Length: 175
Ligand code: AR6
Image (tube, rainbow, N blue to C red; front, side):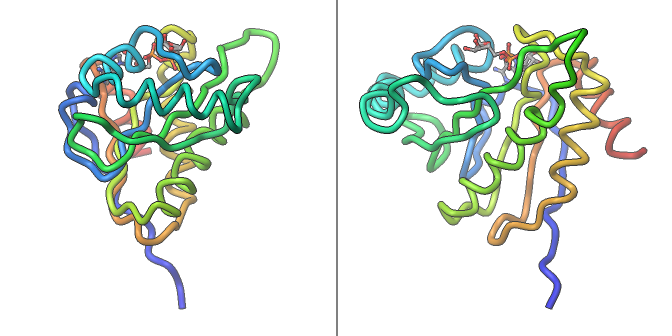
C-alpha cells in the first residue's frame, strides 16, 4: 500500500492567526523566544508556551535545541493543539547548510505526525533574521515536504508573511 502525500497549500498572512493542529515556530536554540515568528507566537500564545519551553530546557535540552531538530509544546491560546519549535540554520555564504534546513521541515513533520496531527502550518524557516535567500528557502521547503508521507498528516500549509515570500513559494510549487 502506498501512503498518500499531504496536500500543500499557500496562505498569505500571519501564522499566529491560523487554525491548524500544529503551528511550527522558527525558534532559536535557546527556546526562550526572540523576534519574528518566534516573538509573535509567544506573544499571542501566552506564557504557557514559554513555561513549556523552559521545562524542556530543564529536562531534555539543557544545552538548547540543536539546529535542524524539532520539539513540541502546548499551543497556549493559539488556534492549534501544539506548537512545534524548530531551529533553522543561519544562512552562510561559504557553507552549504541546506541539509539542516531540510531537516527542520522533516523533523517538524515527524513530530507532528507522532502527535496525530492532520494539518501542519509552517512559516518560511530561516528566511527572516537568519538571512536565508527566499528562492532557495522556498525550494528546499517545498521539496522536503513533497518527499514526506507521514500519516495522519493530510495538509501542509505554508504561511507567508508578504507577497514576495508568497511568490517564491508559488514558483517553487509550480516548478
Ligand atoms: N507569520 C508568518 N510569517 C512570519 C511572521 C508571522 N507572524 N513574522 C515573520 N514572518 P524569522 P528565522 C516571516 O525571522 O529567519 C527569531 O528571533 C518572515 O518574514 O521569524 O528562522 C528567532 O528567535 C520570514 O520570511 O525566523 C530566531 O532567533 C520568516 O517568517 C530567529 O528569529 C522567518 O523569519 C530565527 O530566524
